[in-house]
Amino acid sequence: GATPKDGPSAGIAMCTALVSSLTGNPVKCEVAMTGEITLRGEVLAIGGLKEKLLAAHRGGIKTVVIPKENERDLEEIPDNVKQDLDIHPVQWIDEVLDIALQEPVESFKPVALDGE
Image 1 (spheres, helix red, strand yellow):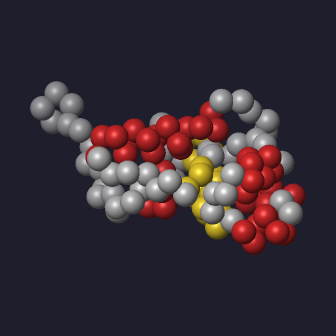
Image 2 (image 1 turned 90 degrees about the vertical axis):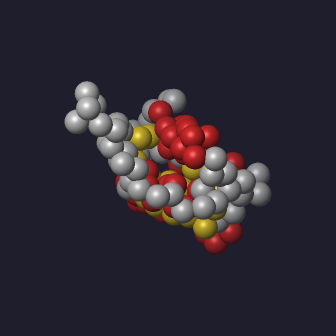
Image 3 (image 1 turned 45 degrees about the horizontal axis):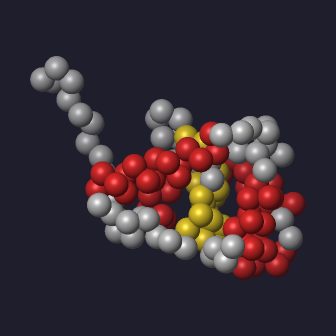
Protein backbone atom coordinates (compact mmCIF):
# COMPACT_ATOMS: atom_id res chain seq x y z
CA GLY A 1 0.00 0.00 0.00
CA ALA A 2 0.87 3.66 0.20
CA THR A 3 3.40 5.08 2.62
CA PRO A 4 1.66 5.67 5.97
CA LYS A 5 1.30 9.41 6.62
CA ASP A 6 -0.63 11.66 8.97
CA GLY A 7 -2.01 15.09 8.11
CA PRO A 8 -1.27 15.80 4.45
CA SER A 9 -4.16 13.64 3.22
CA ALA A 10 -6.50 16.61 3.77
CA GLY A 11 -4.56 18.70 1.23
CA ILE A 12 -6.99 18.42 -1.69
CA ALA A 13 -9.95 19.04 0.63
CA MET A 14 -8.36 22.23 1.98
CA CYS A 15 -7.44 23.41 -1.52
CA THR A 16 -10.98 22.72 -2.76
CA ALA A 17 -12.42 24.64 0.21
CA LEU A 18 -10.16 27.62 -0.56
CA VAL A 19 -11.13 27.67 -4.24
CA SER A 20 -14.79 27.37 -3.26
CA SER A 21 -14.50 30.27 -0.82
CA LEU A 22 -12.59 32.51 -3.23
CA THR A 23 -14.90 31.85 -6.19
CA GLY A 24 -18.23 31.51 -4.38
CA ASN A 25 -18.64 28.11 -6.05
CA PRO A 26 -20.03 25.65 -3.46
CA VAL A 27 -18.61 22.18 -2.89
CA LYS A 28 -21.07 19.34 -3.53
CA CYS A 29 -22.13 17.97 -0.14
CA GLU A 30 -22.16 14.34 -1.31
CA VAL A 31 -18.45 14.30 -2.25
CA ALA A 32 -15.64 13.13 0.03
CA MET A 33 -11.97 13.43 -0.89
CA THR A 34 -8.53 12.49 0.33
CA GLY A 35 -5.12 13.25 -1.09
CA GLU A 36 -1.93 15.15 -0.52
CA ILE A 37 -1.24 18.05 -2.92
CA THR A 38 2.02 19.49 -4.19
CA LEU A 39 2.69 23.18 -4.82
CA ARG A 40 2.15 22.48 -8.53
CA GLY A 41 -1.25 20.86 -7.98
CA GLU A 42 -0.32 17.20 -8.30
CA VAL A 43 -2.34 14.85 -6.10
CA LEU A 44 -0.14 12.38 -4.19
CA ALA A 45 -0.84 9.03 -2.52
CA ILE A 46 -2.10 8.77 1.04
CA GLY A 47 -2.17 6.06 3.68
CA GLY A 48 -5.24 4.40 5.17
CA LEU A 49 -7.39 4.37 2.03
CA LYS A 50 -9.36 1.29 3.11
CA GLU A 51 -10.36 2.87 6.42
CA LYS A 52 -11.29 6.16 4.74
CA LEU A 53 -13.48 4.49 2.11
CA LEU A 54 -15.18 2.32 4.73
CA ALA A 55 -15.93 5.43 6.81
CA ALA A 56 -17.30 7.26 3.75
CA HIS A 57 -19.50 4.27 2.98
CA ARG A 58 -20.80 4.11 6.57
CA GLY A 59 -21.47 7.86 6.44
CA GLY A 60 -23.65 7.59 3.35
CA ILE A 61 -21.21 9.32 1.01
CA LYS A 62 -21.71 8.38 -2.65
CA THR A 63 -18.74 10.01 -4.44
CA VAL A 64 -15.12 9.79 -3.29
CA VAL A 65 -12.05 11.38 -4.88
CA ILE A 66 -8.77 9.53 -4.28
CA PRO A 67 -5.20 9.87 -5.58
CA LYS A 68 -4.55 7.93 -8.79
CA GLU A 69 -1.46 6.47 -7.08
CA ASN A 70 -3.80 4.74 -4.60
CA GLU A 71 -5.77 2.88 -7.29
CA ARG A 72 -3.81 -0.30 -6.54
CA ASP A 73 -5.11 -0.16 -2.94
CA LEU A 74 -8.70 -0.63 -4.17
CA GLU A 75 -8.02 -4.41 -4.21
CA GLU A 76 -8.30 -4.31 -0.39
CA ILE A 77 -11.78 -2.74 -0.46
CA PRO A 78 -14.79 -5.09 -0.14
CA ASP A 79 -16.75 -5.42 -3.40
CA ASN A 80 -20.03 -4.21 -1.85
CA VAL A 81 -18.33 -0.96 -0.78
CA LYS A 82 -16.77 -0.44 -4.22
CA GLN A 83 -20.16 -1.03 -5.85
CA ASP A 84 -21.89 1.53 -3.62
CA LEU A 85 -19.24 4.25 -4.07
CA ASP A 86 -18.45 6.27 -7.18
CA ILE A 87 -14.65 6.35 -6.79
CA HIS A 88 -12.68 8.89 -8.86
CA PRO A 89 -8.88 8.40 -8.99
CA VAL A 90 -7.23 11.74 -9.91
CA GLN A 91 -3.72 13.02 -10.55
CA TRP A 92 -4.24 16.82 -10.63
CA ILE A 93 -6.21 19.33 -8.55
CA ASP A 94 -8.19 20.56 -11.57
CA GLU A 95 -9.71 17.06 -11.82
CA VAL A 96 -10.72 17.31 -8.15
CA LEU A 97 -12.36 20.70 -8.70
CA ASP A 98 -14.29 19.41 -11.73
CA ILE A 99 -15.76 16.62 -9.60
CA ALA A 100 -16.24 18.43 -6.28
CA LEU A 101 -17.51 21.90 -7.17
CA GLN A 102 -21.09 22.59 -8.25
CA GLU A 103 -20.10 24.75 -11.24
CA PRO A 104 -17.20 24.27 -13.68
CA VAL A 105 -14.11 26.28 -12.75
CA GLU A 106 -12.59 28.49 -15.40
CA SER A 107 -8.85 28.08 -15.75
CA PHE A 108 -6.72 30.09 -13.39
CA LYS A 109 -4.46 32.72 -14.86
CA PRO A 110 -1.06 33.26 -13.18
CA VAL A 111 -0.72 36.46 -11.21
CA ALA A 112 1.86 38.84 -12.69
CA LEU A 113 4.66 39.76 -10.32
CA ASP A 114 6.31 43.21 -10.34
CA GLY A 115 4.26 44.48 -13.27
CA GLU A 116 5.25 41.65 -15.63
